[in-house]
Image (cartoon, rainbow, N blue to C red; front, side, top):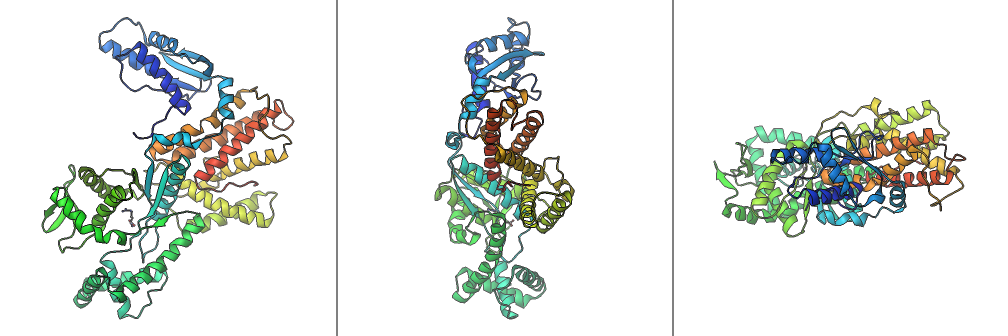
Length: 551
Ligand code: ARG
């Protein structure tokens, strides 16, 4: 089964309770049970609207023993046994059931270390994430960077939750364009050990020549044949071109501190013919005007997976790759992080893989302004910190702005819903009050600083909740596992960002109301700060962002 908020989380526990009460009292009601976080915390912490849904289902079925949804709500509440978990369960409005957690429950959850393994078995175990995947002899563009950042975070969360991940860089290192490129470089005496920007310029010139010069075109095609038969000299040049590009990609991965393992398109080349044969015999791909095609139900234009000249292409490679990942690498779940423009391509690949009996998975993405953005982000953060004034030395400001620049760019990318396009805004980046990395970093540094000043550490013997803001902070901390699971369920790092942002703002509200050092309930408050810091650090690390201790 796919991830869902399981019994290990608060939402999961609540849903389970309401569900068993409903099943007992209303055995015919078989729709999913609704429990969600309460938007208005003065009503409760969680809320269920199921009573209204059940009431209308009963009314439809001609069952009239209940006068109103509130009566149904009464019945559900009466069936909930684990009362220690709650301070109160109340019914409001037309029949909303509001749950307010008890201090005892909050305390015991707070004392429990987050055990990632508990979350594990709810999702398939071996997750293969295909991300970043730039193309050899071309610059990495914003789509690749976005893919790199989102893919890395998804892997972090999966790994933390106990899954085995395979981080695959499906580099574009194969195809007819290499024939053209190698031919052009040979003719012009260009070293294959060139920078990516030189290679890219070469590539453009080669393409122009290819389109107008028949002799060059013929020679390029011969070169492709040589490469495909692994002619030593040609293969050597190909390898040199690849390693020049690879080195440049690696500097970007190092700078972003991202781990990924290359397994490029060339890896699957020899598997393509047999995979296409298999699919053709299963009638999943068919010949159309000389080309082999995948027809998807709703789309009229097919996806070509072998060109009419017999050449393989991007889709042929992906068919072979998906089969290999399922059949040989035994992936239980495969995630592709690319721009949304490739949606149709993947839809066709997944449909074919499914019908071939292999399995399926899907994630698609769009663009974000990035790249040169990184340098400018650092510079702007540096200026910002200098002008704002801090206790940091110039070297410390330098370090902090480096970290802030990278965090801002990463966070801007992760915080947005995967599917929306957005433009990176430097002004927003520096917004100290908004949902920005800057705000999160300041909040983190604030908690860290408070704790540096405190003489007490560890869990107090008498943990108590003396103020509503303490209570809300404690609840936000213990919602961490819920946040992890929703992130994985929706494959959306933005959910984790939302969690961290709410944690920071809940902390800041707490801190505005509750004096910590030398205040009331000091030991419990310090303990809350510790748990906050721990949870913040954990979330930062899953997002691939380095938190700052001082700002
Ligand atoms: N190299 C491709 C591109 O730049 C992305 C590859 C994504 N992964 C895949 N298995 N197709 O668009």
